[in-house]
Length: 64
Image 1 (cartoon, rainbow, N blue to C red):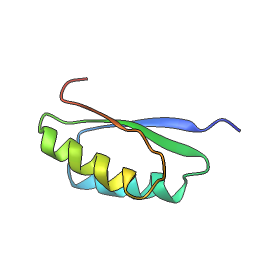
Image 2: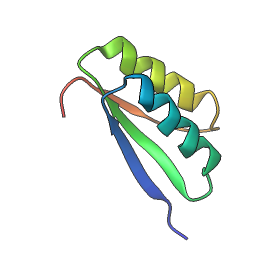
Image 3: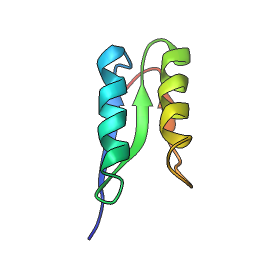
């Protein structure tokens, strides 16, 4: 089965729960991008995901 691909726009507090859900459903879903006007927040969420999923490649954006 093909995985659903997700992007997170806005890396505030709730985004951590979205990342957690994607990690828990790694067989069916994957995070491909994060976007926030604060690049440090986007980088943090990217690192949270990539540290838990082998070979994950998440792109970061400041503008969607």
